[in-house]
Length: 181
Ligand code: 5GP
Ligand code: MG
Image 1 (cartoon, protein in one colour):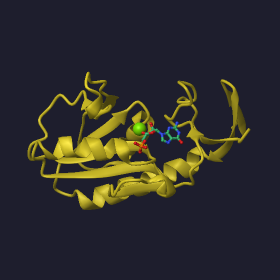
Image 2 (cartoon, protein in one colour):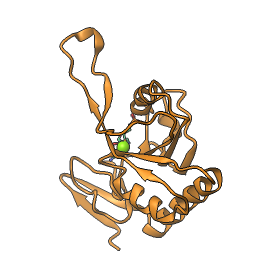
Image 3 (cartoon, protein in one colour):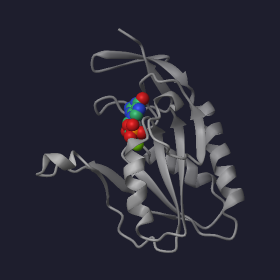
């Protein structure tokens, strides 16, 4: 495993190894396995970053579960007053009465999910919970409740395991932290 990687103009150092990540993924899966006995949750990963976490998480789930990916898109409306609302696109099935678990790679300010969750709640699901591999507690700006967290990390920018720096680094098995310039 390479300890330093270079992506575009920046260097990154190894921060969380694949085995540490997979341990955290298993811990999240175990909690879901215990709490959803007898139910059939619908897992909703947020693309692109969450694809790798979603894949490893599903492999550890021992219950019946379904999967539907969404993307958080910033909608560029014509009126300035609305700003750039974030909407969820791609959910192609009804979530009414379903136990939904939103799967995120990382929660930073929490703004993305705090916009998406009300859209979900408006469709009368049985429940909506959030599982994020990573959480930056010091960056959180909303009162978002994150039900399952793999690892809490400081505010530094990271890449790898699905997360990118300007399009690169998603394929790395480990997580790397940016080296300050
Ligand atoms: P939030 O809305 O919680 O501020 O941001 C969530 C999204 O920002 C994440 O899903 C991710 O796409 C991106 N993000 C936040 N922090 C990082 C980071 O350290 N590295 C990368 N690659 N993306 C991040
Ligand atoms: Mg994400």
